[in-house]
Image 1 (cartoon, rainbow, N blue to C red):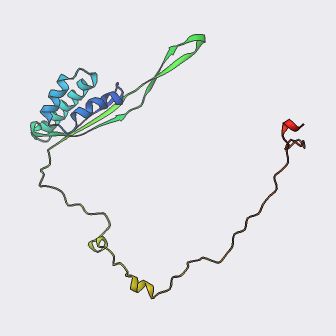
Image 2: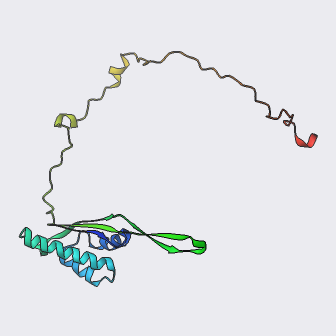
Image 3: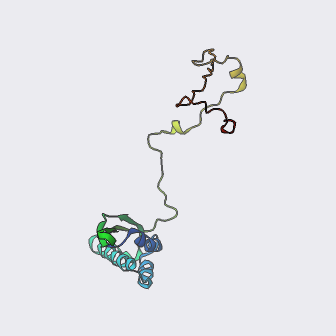
Length: 176
């Protein structure tokens, strides 16, 4: 079951600190941990967990006490800007960060139940290993050079350009 908070006036970094405590925990443990935490983000997340529990009990007729916090995603929302007057008539701009928080509850997966995963677009014949050629089969065939020509590379030496002023400044300044 899902519940979400949109454009909450708290920075996402602060919410994420508390969200790390709650992810993957059973719902009663998560609520107990959030009640004991003295942070604004803990109060917001506690209300969000309780809302998701109510959604699970009312909408889907599930038992929220047996569920765990499957995922808790904290995203950055649009920031708004505030200014503080500074010296010489200037203004210092501060950004006030907002957050989007999405919580999803679910039942814990049993250890024996794992869905069979299959790579997309591959059949069983593509997963098998190719046969490797032995040295005897490769020794009978001469190697081909693909697109290689016998070309030699040459290097050309270019004399250094003299200075822009036409001065003979190439000699050391101590000899002048």
